[in-house]
Image (cartoon, rainbow, N blue to C red):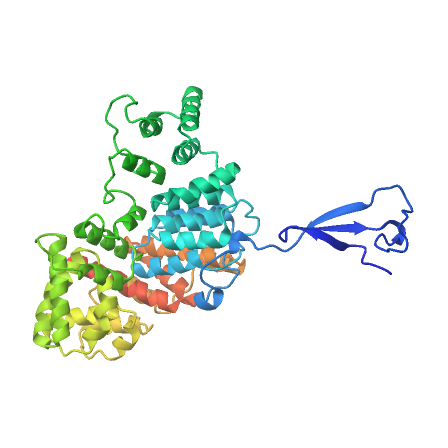
Length: 495
């Protein structure tokens, strides 16, 4: 009987294979020759088996996104992290595409052993208020790495789910060195004596001080502390947010970072607060337009001014659209459009109503609004083919919607730079070189940076960004981003 000299004899969760090399070709597995021929211990070698890389995890497969699995593999993780952190995306189309990239299933950068790229993706999702998506991604990767556990703990605490965090920390203390979290969890688990001991030791050693130490002191004993007023932090951690809540001093979410807005979507804090949270998230592209509509139409507004005027105008438009009388629709459309513009919600509005408005016969100002809504909708290209208005603005926007070079320049913001981008401008050579090096994801991010610079007035950067998107095959992104930039900036100029 013979065996493979590198036969697997055991493994653990696909992590390591153990191989025994038999000296002199002697078969140590043979039952008819149990006597060892040498006192020398067998040589044992360890080699990693192919195991799933958590950095490659994603919610969207390549066949869904159209992006290759090598999207990030050729780039430096620190470079990608810096680009993701610095991005300030000016139009919804870019934010929607960025969301797809952050959720895409793709191999991480080569050499990214500390999961820096995955951490950057999760951080971006959290900061955009895409909390459920970030948690779903962590469900795939697991939380066995301390960095991933820290992000998961923040997201869970943000949603008020402290028990799973504290159970996980109790089972595996190595997952976190955060003394504040240890103190909080010890108290939540009923071990107040241990929590107080850890807090006292941390204060004595200088590991905890200032507002965090005061918060924990009062959390353990409401009568303790220095007696002074606790000023709320500008950017509280989820743990600090929950500590203020436990002390009976809950922080309002409106001035806090975007991810805290998800806490008010339930409506527990009132309809007005729910509407404001929904608008914040819809503005960032982190809430579907249909859900925003559902919140807008929960009940009749009982007041006027501010957000109530927007709700009243939207509900009036909904009723008019349901009746189908063009004159009434035209009147209500002229009321609701500026309201949605003031809330920076024209793209969600267009997603809801752009196609329906295109089927109505409207005139005058209402017809112009309907055209712009159609061009901001997902059906912009097909709707552009049916436009009959012969104004310079409509001809220009229609050409962009069809990916054509405009014949003439319209009186629109960024029109010349956009026209140049659709007139055969090449991708910048530096981006072309990076693409040849297999840095596709990085090139897309850099093109987004150029678009943001162009939206602030640098025409050449805007042209380069559009040309880059088109060269990369991101034609829909190039068209939608250009249309949104011009139409939304034109609406701001009209107000």
